[in-house]
Image 1 (cartoon, rainbow, N blue to C red):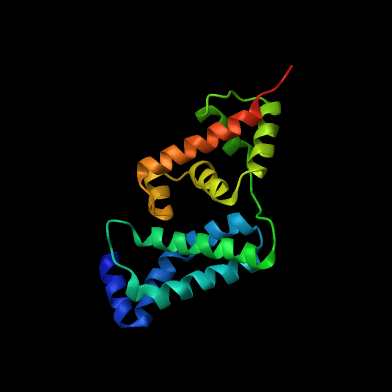
Image 2: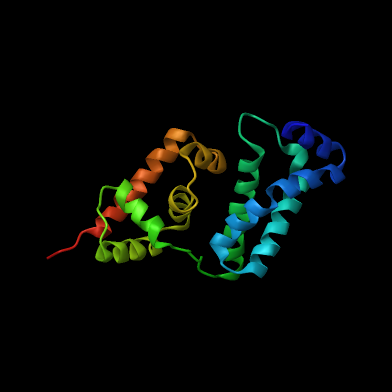
Length: 176
């Protein structure tokens, strides 16, 4: 049975949602955990994501965008809501290799000083910009996947990402 059949079955019988839950739970959990860095909060948010997905499944229509993108959009919204409700600052899990890849793609070269500047520039990003950078460089998502998750065109995802990189590049200039 393909995914669309599972979705239609779950619309008629909520017990059939189990297949979708099992298929996507780990992905959504990791997506949320990367943004909260707290397993208890992550578990709560992930459960809320699937509960909302189940409650709103009747409204889901396949329009060429994968079901997973719909779940990621719900997850992103729930993470943002969590931080608004709790007046907390989002956690960013940075790895040196991810930052090096970002520097390479931005033709900035790799050196320890630039790496530290990138860490500082990332911390200054607005939440929507941070999410774009996280999905592209830390989660290794294609522009198509980012577009599906954010509900924008693939070209718009590229443009937004490169504008964010250009904004960050201004923070990478080292005056000698």
